[in-house]
Length: 121
Image (cartoon, rainbow, N blue to C red; front, top):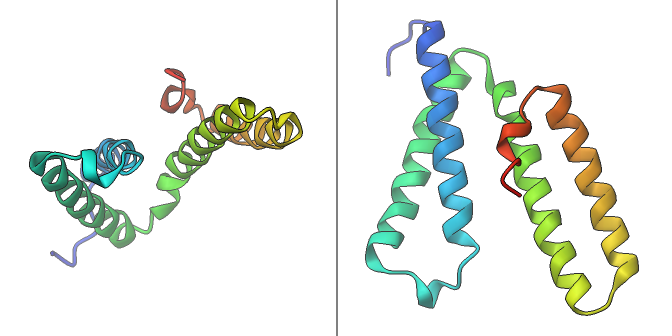
């Protein structure tokens, strides 16, 4: 990797690649391992490699802060999934806690202008 500071377009590309790979990684990791095909297992490895490479570019540019919205989106999606499981078990107090967490992460994403990361949920 070059020691020169990455350009603005390289940073934008790194964030986009990181987000895309992380979302695919999370999607595949939520599934039982026994249900994954070989190409999906390969996709997990590729996603991890893309995330590592992109994170390296962002670290070199001193902009790892740009991954924060994605981390909030992942936490939001996890809380939403957890809330669904709790509701299925009639644990409504647990649902309230999960919904509070979802609201916090939604607020962070709205502040960052990145509700697009969770709008499909």
